[in-house]
Image (cartoon, rainbow, N blue to C red):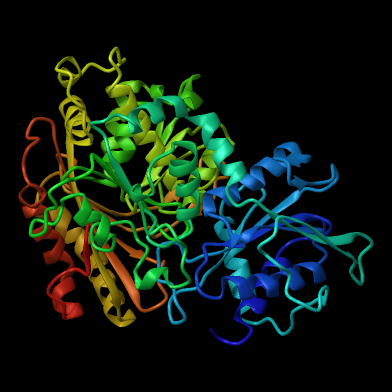
Length: 560
């Protein structure tokens, strides 16, 4: 890592905040366990103290998932009193937000990605205006503040409070509190879902599951959930010991990188195991993304979101109904069909969870998601991988009740209703959005720029090619604060609603990533292969972008 990288960026965060926003406030600090996690925490503790922070709250062993961080922030600012039995905040103390050490689903290790993320006091990611200001400041910063509050590193493995007294320039005592990484978050999930119903499903003789933590932070929560709360055998969990390099893997929950889970679930045609679990799931490095699988069956993130929304009544948290639905622009329109049938308002926003946060804070959104395996609700202000997995288990539990609210022939037959059954029933009701994503990772910047310049020129060509064709550069005007987000991706739409979308992704540190999203809707042709259904659209997408010719590649890095 570049010398002083962490110190410079963290000081830039504090410099972008007013003294009233940080002095004698509580800062949540933790990470997903990737390389440099513990070292960075020690640096940030001293910088936080020097900038007037009153208390730094850290998960045990320096670990907190991104969803758990959001939950802790919101709990502190809702109660300002007591977090379980081991976190105390004085009434005058307010949580300013959090610094999260994660690069989400990107590789870890000494030469992998390392990220510093700031979440605001609503629990959600910092807004674009603030992050832009922080980044620009980090490029010109000349000094950072450090308080030598301790001669030795602060121990991160013991729950409790360490008080250091007053820091020069401030009248309050500075302290660090180590809390249980899992307690508050698991307690929140227990208030959202019917754990008794899920437990009954998990202990059926004809049901089995496996969860893959991909050696990220979700493993500690999976153990607390599936081993402690639901009393499953340890064999139900794989990759649930967090490692600094994610075990040498890429902690991205998709069909390419979650190789072990994909094989266990029978999705490798060459290596199908004799015994396959009924349900499989995985989370990424910081546990905010998820993948759901059935036996030999992949649930696309777009379908997963739509199925959860359509079956929201099985989740006690939504007993009062839904406020609204939303999806990121590249996500398929499957959710739109559900919203229309339920009579709910729905919105299409740019990629980035902060756009959902504004709608949630305004009371206009309950369930939302992104095609990049992110799903969540307004219980926090981040996407939440384990929330999505428990939502699916709740749906399965309801489908398999003897007198369930959802009609299904297999219940009457006494057979287990599977993930595949549920998805196919959804398609029969709402139609099917055939969908695929092509990722071209680590492209050189010049090639990426040429591809997008050509796409810009070809929008007019596409529109002239067929009556009803439409092409646009997606722009979003936030209905809450009227902020405008421009150049969020190119959308090429056909008269029947089918489309292909091009977007540049900013989640990696090397080169550029271009993502192509392919989608075709059918109300009645439900059993085509995805490749066949998207064949003509794929040909057009490659033709109008010339991505293979310009990049000198003959195929995507990842196909989802």
